[in-house]
Image (cartoon, rainbow, N blue to C red):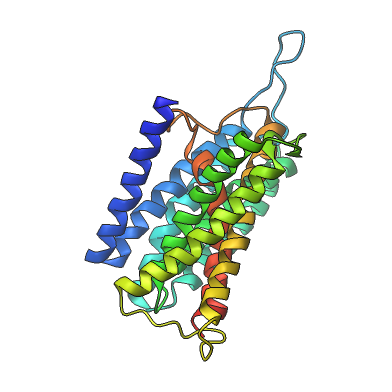
Length: 302
């Protein structure tokens, strides 16, 4: 427990540090996203290469065993992803997403070509595994890059992304430990309870509304989104953001749990003592990030 607490504090310190670096230049935040992408990709490829032991002591072949060429393609995609975004942003402002789209198309095409040129070693299962390792986490992390470059309210969007998930996750654990009760998904994550999920959602909603209030007090931010002519509209919008982001945090955790269960591992890595790998720490954040960015783009920044 002590090790987990120390690691959690260190992780929060790193996130806070990058928020301060954003004040120097928003692109400094891309370093954090880049680190998440590279480390997370390594953890995914390593997980998909894990060989479970049979009863006789022999090792099973991974269900989604990737060839060396497929692994190189996944790593190359992760290595290029964030730099391509900022390169295109520098050359053609506000067009960085086009660089990501073109790189993603190229990545998919390379994996298909490998099925021809490296057909003896590259399988369809491996291509599917490579696609998943490219999408999760790298493609999802693109929403953090895009949220970081929103024309207004980018800091608020990132605060919601990085605060709601830990709050929902923490209070789901606390409330679930106190009230216990019926399991949420016993076959996937036996420690999660329905009472804990409800507690996480309630506190996630509260955190979202509180963040909006504090942000408006400490900055010149003015809500211009859906229903801005009504005083109650932003409170409702941010309460709904907290609600859905909290639910997605729970779902993201379950999604990663099922991946780990399928490949036969307990944690994605050992980078964060007491927590596991970086993906074990940001699984819910990834799902929440996608939703928060979309809502800010479509409803909050109208």
